Amino acid sequence: MQFDIAVIGGGPGGSSTAISAARAGLRVVLFEKAQYGRDKVCGDGLTPRAIGALNDLNIDHSISHRIDGLRMIAGKKQRELSWPTTDRFPNHGAVWPRKKFDNHLLDIAIESGADVRFTAEALPVIEDGVVIGVEVNGEVIRASLVVLATGAQGAAAKMLGAVRDPDETFGLAIRAYAPTPRHAERHLEACLSLRDEHGTPVPGYGWMFPAGDGTVNIGVGALSTMKGFKKLNLNTLLDQYASIVREPWSLGEYVDKPRAWRLPMSCVRRHGPGWVAVGDAAGFVNPMNGEGIDYALESGMLAVQCFIDNPATAPSSYDTQVGERFDAFLRTGRRFSFIIGHPWLLRPGLRVAVGTQVAADITLAVMGNLIDSTTPGAAGKVMRLADNALRIADPILRRTRAKA
Image (tube, rainbow, N blue to C red):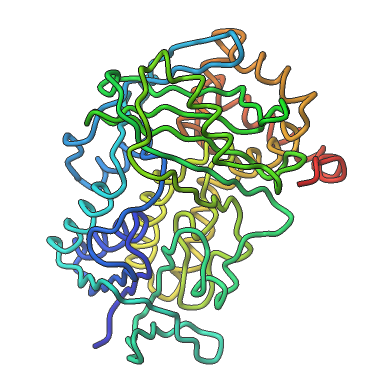
């Protein structure tokens, strides 16, 4: 059978693509290599931008745990801020454990008419440089467009050259669930002043994301730009952070073994003849918070719209439009990560980030993925100035970056 779109991967980006395509009357098939009900290790946080994307998809998110803002901690300084009310995004986010969230989206994709197949590992089929479909269990299934939604780049991505740029930042994170009486709080908590077991400041943060189900998602993440990154023990870092929050959160023991994952933050190629990459597979992860669910949802919808507009030009049109939407902000974040990889720059940077209300509001917008090429106001202006300044400074930043 000939499909219009074949999707590799059943995460938010893949489901967003399948839902949008099916509702538009396209013939779409989605392949997920795991069984139905699989879990995806993640922080489980949904930004207001992600909630906005779910609204665009007309997906009910009322069963998730609503989040109204962010509590930022840097040393002894603490600020609790509400998500801003804007014309573009709602003023609330959510915590929705990925095992439930991803399966909910897949259920909706199936209900919308998408052909969703589990325990099916698909690889692209390439003829004369053009992706003409996928191969699954020895069977070739043809499609006019193949959408790579595989998360952290794997075998399918390597075949297409959609791999991480080795000269760019990436991240590692680890999370666990633990019981707490504060599980129903409406604010996320982010500790921006992490240190490793040697007392070295870590470019990253520790988080407490209340899930509303008796537990909190507790985790830590770090960027590859810090000196000694390869020797960083994530389990130790998580335990150190847990010891800090145990008393104020009345935190219990981990419900299960902590699980770690890699955060791709760049991509050498995100499109080509007959294919596009969405979400994490395209490197759409904010280096300042490790968040990418919102970008996955948006890029999946955009890929389908480009196909509807013109199947022949969909890959190149998608690359242009998604670049206009995300590239400047994500590029600025990657360059900024080189700066905060230096401890002597990270410490004063944190003081500035939460030192004043204006700075804290901008930090909140960054942590909420609320900034892109069209953001108005102070936050948008600061990020555009930062993009220009860091573009000029980029050669110096790369030469002086802290080596992993």
